Amino acid sequence: MARVLSPDAEGIKEAAEIIRAEGLVAFPTETVYGLGANALSALAVTKIFAAKARPHFDPVIVHVADPKDAEKLWLTVPKLAQDLIEKFWPGPLTLVLPKREIVPDIVTAGLPTVAVRMPSHPVALDLIREAGVPVAAPSANRFGRLSPTHHEAVLEQLGGLIDAIIAAGPTPVGIESTVVSLAESPPRLLRPGGTPIEALLEFLPDLRVEPPQGPSASPGTLPRHYQPSTALFLLEPGPPAGQEALERDKCGFLAFQRVWEGFARVEVLSPRGDLVEAAARFFSLLRKLDRAGLLAIVAEPLPEVGLGLAIMDRLRRASSGRARLDKTKVWIIR
Ligand code: TXA
Ligand code: MG
Image (cartoon, rainbow, N blue to C red; front, side, top):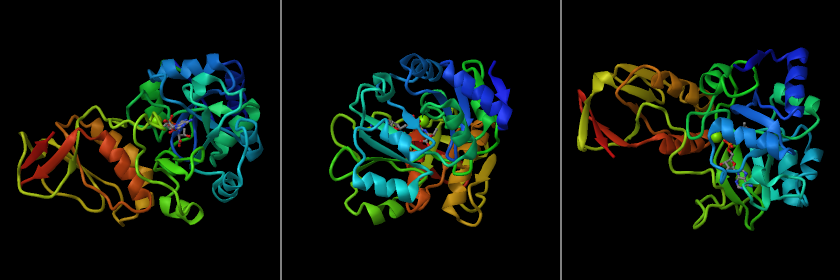
């Protein structure tokens, strides 16, 4: 089982030693928990893929504690990248640029680019500094499952497969970083996330937000991802219709602002309708519903502005289809 370390100087020292010795340490970032390894060691990064059962076509993000360290990973840092770094780092923005030779191919899944970010969580920054190497880290979940926003969720999925975890409670942002490729012109949004698009558009008015065509520029953006074990369906308006009807009182409901009647269990993302709060609670409430022994989970769509865009991206990938409601039933459209 993973050693459970405290987020104090001693715990961080021990975690850094494991990273330097090519082991795996789960650690908190402001977005979600990451599963970290020495990014400059192909062997260490290979262990991440094994523990997560992650396919090798899906590259990982490299975390640095100082923008200067990003310069050691990227071939060049264009002015645009410098401006974005100044404005958004440390924080939930990942930038993709052509890589230097020292970045092992396994990190980038053979791509000529590498994704880098500087997290703002103090424990993540302390760990990276103490380790003295950049830290490759995908979200600390089994491939395709819910991202962990609490150390308990990491231990549940990966406890037997990693060397240690720094246990620091819930992560404040709750959804992964926004990923932007500056390797193409104009720049492209590869994944909506914790930095709202509206804030980026001020700096990148020509940012392309539509999904890329053809062979994926961001191999990790699969249509099915973030999946709970209990089937999830996205609520849509309209009269009852579908292939299958489930009893409403055996299903769960993930609501935005208000409690909906007739479900076995309802979790409300943000009673005051705050999308930042909804993002922070999203994965943990979905996990609660997932563990409640329900027939299915129905999720209410959220407004697609601010962090709502990133939440809806996760919900679409988490869902197995759509649902319509009548007074007592949930109608499933697969
Ligand atoms: O907030 C986050 O970003 C978290 C924390 C731990 O930092 N990490 C995270 O990593 O979400 P992961 O591996 O679950 O997602 C990384 C995403 C994937 O969609 C992957 O395809 C994309 O970033 N990515 C990584 N390197 C890339 C590259 N060179 N080119 C394009 N996309 C890349
Ligand atoms: Mg992930």
